[in-house]
Image (cartoon, rainbow over all chains, first blue to last red; front, side):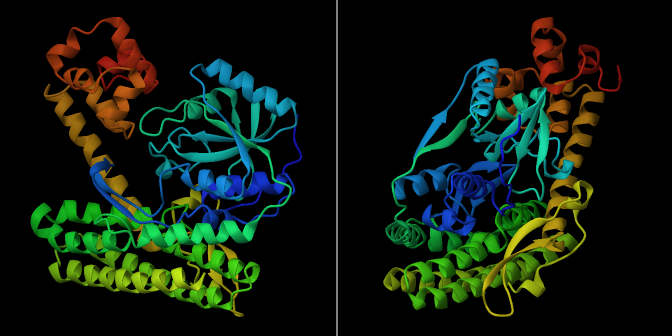
Length: 331
Length: 135
């Protein structure tokens, strides 16, 4: 069986699944809109949490949070299921498909056979839509892929029950109830306010202050950790910032697209100006990644190289502080 | 980022023949989506990370062959895991998994425990006991 489901590619999996499920239900909400209303733009440095042997630096909030805020702010009811038993999880999924209901699934990336090997890490908060089943093969719409794909029963079972941090436990979800009219204006304002609050938070590891903190650390890394580790850490930042999912520049360009859309909906030209401004800041993040890559490409110790990228981050932090203050006032 | 500047560098995405989606400004200053085949700075970052993992695997292999650690550690590295991830896959405490790295402890493990590891790594018990065996 195959549900008539339209696959749209997106930059980020969580926004993409939400946007595609909503479009399926007749609500034309773009990926940037989901991202903006769900307050997806973020920055946090978590020194005590290590991923891939480097401290976590994230440009987004906790997995699932964007969707949660988005649905709450638009008063959309979403049904979530988690399972202990793999067999029961499959039966529940098959029942939904039989009801002509495409569902979102949270899965682990490591065993996703259609991903290039190099991208298969133990990351458990990937999202996809299942929109049908032929014999023992599921039809999959993975929003980061250009085209739809498939997974066998066994393969899907494996990724739904991946283990480790954020283990999906068969997590399945779909919207069940929409309000009569989606009140975008209110939701957009709430989303923007919450992002400004996060980015300007008086917490040393969050938002603008977090960026400054990381800049200070980068200066110390080559001396404190040695070149090899310093380069590994620096590479990790660039990967979190640019790897599949962020749409480039640590989500700043998606946010620019959101502000552009928001300026039309709210009839507020100021937001369009700010959309350009965050785009320029996104370009600075790209410059930072480019300079950082020059350092770890040569695997050499250029101490002034680290200083230079750290200086860039400080400039970015200053610009973002200014930007989010203006954004807060604009709405 | 302008649409014309969306990078089209060679990358690891090529092997799966897909391009990722980016957001960029077009000539009229409006946001549009554009596909990118990859960008060198991040390809280098990814390749460095993979090289790092390969070095870890090689190191673990040498240590297994020198009887300094058990094959469990080698297979853990091979599957890009760390102790926490492996522990949650086999359903044991981290300290227990860590203990199984000791060759003397590993030698005495029951078939039941060995089976747990073999299932997670998708290999036979013979392969688990001898990392150079291919059956």
